[in-house]
Length: 257
Image (cartoon, rainbow, N blue to C red):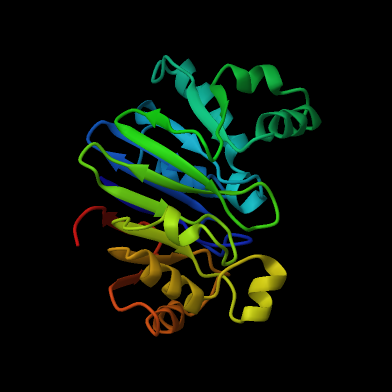
């Protein structure tokens, strides 16, 4: 299976880019992981909504979820064009369905419209879900809101870990232990910023990757214009394995070390 970077920018999308969004794909279709501002337009350059098996949202901050609103209209259009027959499963954190529906009401009583194209499911840290050939696991992380890290396992045992947004905390190392690829936020530049904003520094991302014994560490979640090479070099002080800075439209094979 493969991971494609749709967008890596936070808390807003820079020129020509998208905010946070990724696609996990195999020969049978794909999953959208996060759907921040600008993601849908970039996603549609590469992918067909007919092959979308599900959408996973780690938390409802706009840089991770704002494009759920245009995605709903795109799915409705796909149904009208006879490109899709079934709604898409949308996986939200606990309490996420009520929160999403509240916003839909504020946008003009759109609950009924979106219920035609999404089936809502809330996940939890104690629950495994299946999407197509994938098994998906969740673990609550340390972002100050109801945010969950994700592990997606393919049908050949390949494992992708995704930190979502988090500061360092107990349980991260165990949850991501031995994953083939860890997609890890590396947002801030100092430990003080990390504690104040509930994000990781590149050095902490490297420490986590090393402690968890991951095969490939991919850094993501940057301000537009960030010096990616500097992020990589800081993480490399603590991680000696394969280390990459996420680039828009990059494709990474999961399970090849």
